[in-house]
Length: 275
Ligand SMILES: C[S@@+](CC[C@H](N)C(=O)[O-])C[C@H]1O[C@@H](n2cnc3c(N)ncnc32)[C@H](O)[C@@H]1O
Image 1 (cartoon, protein in one colour):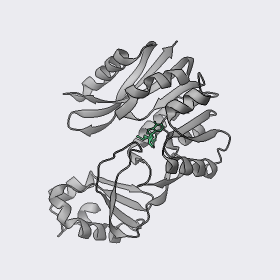
Image 2 (image 1 turned 90 degrees about the vertical axis):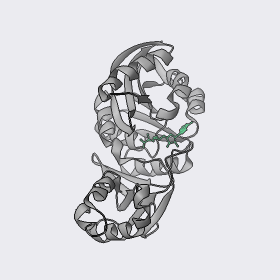
Image 3 (image 1 turned 45 degrees about the vertical axis):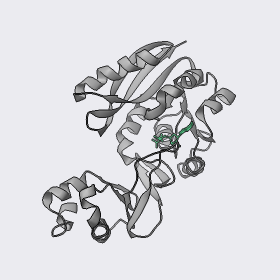
Image 4 (image 1 turned 135 degrees about the vertical axis):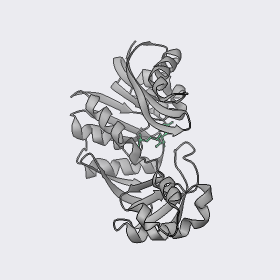
């Protein structure tokens, strides 16, 4: 569809390139436009807005995901300048703000995978929970209690709204603050499972994750791994985890979550720790 719409504006190769850099979140389209096509960005935006009937706004990403809040700058290409929208996934509804908070539709499979691993009755600490995506998908699927911590006040506010939207009051708890402090102050040895989805800084927070974990618990440790070949990641990521963790750990599994650059991957290690 995108290809057809772009006939006369882009070559087939250019349209293919753009397709891989296209996300639709609710009624917002976000594009990562390659430098070679930047001069055509407004017309690309207008064509998309016209062709994608469910779109209200088209933005292009004008900065990488950056800073403590892991957010990106957006430039409006066409339509209404409104970065908040509603997004549906795995039977849940989410209010998201694609500029003020981190959000990625590309983590949908990973959210479903984590929800599938949870056992009924677990207490989960989601240290970098954002607007509550992982927490809410998990709590909808399994009877559990989730602490969703985030340092970004907008993420905390949206998570609180998402808890109500999905009728999970009392099951998922939205907490604003630094995960280390929140764990020290109120969640010591509370988690059967701890999620650490801040791959750039996991090592910095690993001690806190362990403090928040019960004597026996599972940690989902996300990291970035360089590998010449894709199939090396499932070996390299656990090796790396075992070199930085300071409690007894058994590797339950490891996999690529998504590629983040040439020979560079976001990976997850599932580990059973005991202390
Ligand atoms: C990569 S995002 C993941 C968000 C969420 N898990 C998701 O998948 O939508 C990392 C999140 O960690 C939050 N964050 C960064 N530093 C933090 C800290 N010290 N304590 C708690 N949250 C933090 C950011 O605001 C951001 O929302």
